[in-house]
Length: 422
Image (cartoon, rainbow, N blue to C red; front, side):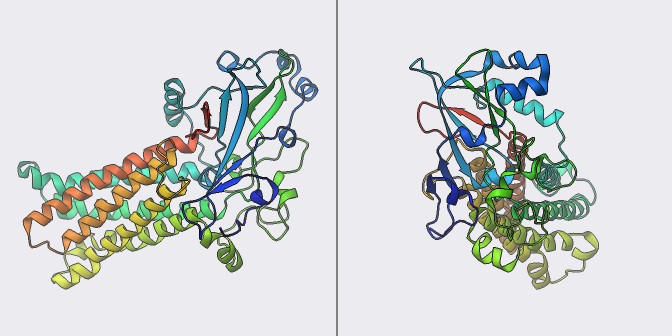
């Protein structure tokens, strides 16, 4: 495999996986080592929190006793500021850790759904990506009703529904997708280049000998409320992990700028163009940009002037096919990024489902454009409009899952062996 750009693999032993041997690995299983990440001793916590430090946390009753904790670094999680751990429950009456409960239980999933309607971290670029694509998908679902429902039920059609309402919503939807793709690229080039564990270990005062894991100490930019993709907060009284792990010529070092617009040509050659996730974001960006041409030409004053078949094919249908193909490639790469091997699905990973639904949505949009070349055939017109309908809903499902994922920063999977966290 190509040597990864990030210092993580050079500083930690572990097993690396990836869907393609000629690209950087996308998954690294790292051994859990308490000492480097021990951020708060019992004395420090007593001094910081006073009398409250002697009280167990509010969720103490839900905490799990575990004999082992495992880590898995995924490139997608790194871009999204997520920190997955795998907890091996205590079955030999030899607990070493207290951990939060599994986040894939019904109760925790309902809490995650509630977060979607109660938390609005507008400073988090991953959250903005999810929200923008969700809004864009909603617009495309509305557009699909405008262009498909009159064909299915002619009595429901109103004047200008397909040409005017359909054309305007196409332009709005394509523009929102383009903006979301720009944010997606900003997220990709500002990934965290250092090893961010994202969990704190502290001695459990009420139960000597146990260590409690709790979310803390994240150095990802997602928690920085001062700017969109600035550096994350360093641990109290300690330098950021990336300041000691990354050379000064890397953007993750303390001497570098807090975020970047464009990577250097060296970074592109040695890192980004070997990253599956970056290639997926790039495919999405290229596809959305070409697809926007079709959205622009769908506006009534412009589309009405495309009087010849050749003009419609070149300015309207062809950009849909090319742009939709970019969505297909992007969805496929996002899906494969979460897999240990290209032929092994990962249905227990949220990112895998996001990739699958976006892949299907891309197929729908591409099929709509391909059938548009035969717009003289009423059957092709109907099937093309229907493809936009189900493709839009697939994009919406994937975007809503991504919305949920963006707020689930510390997934916990309780497993008897080597499981897969969401």
